[in-house]
Image 1 (cartoon, rainbow, N blue to C red):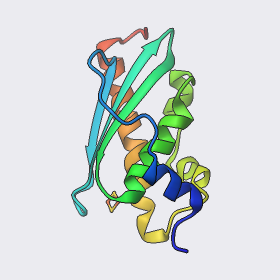
Image 2: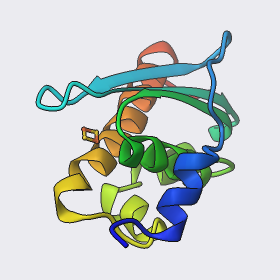
Image 3: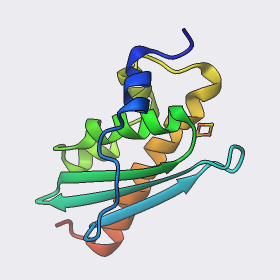
Length: 126
Ligand code: FES
């Protein structure tokens, strides 16, 4: 089996899919090679990630990675979310095939972009 059960589960039943009207930070990233796009929305209170939503126009591994990434940062502090790596996402998914690792990188980048946007809006946190 090419994909782990966890990858299949998060691909078939992705968590936290959607958009957010009052997001405190929005990040959108894309991969030029495959053309996939990922967008992350963050709701932040007292520097804790209160809510997170994502929209991914991409492959199954990108959808599973973004779903898992949202689960990993929900309820965490902004600082902890900033430290999330694609390696941690991949490990939480019980691995991805080597040629699909870039999909998890997209998830890390989307969260960092959303946090970047948050800090631009709220330089002193919120
Ligand atoms: Fe590009 Fe998965 S193939 S994000």
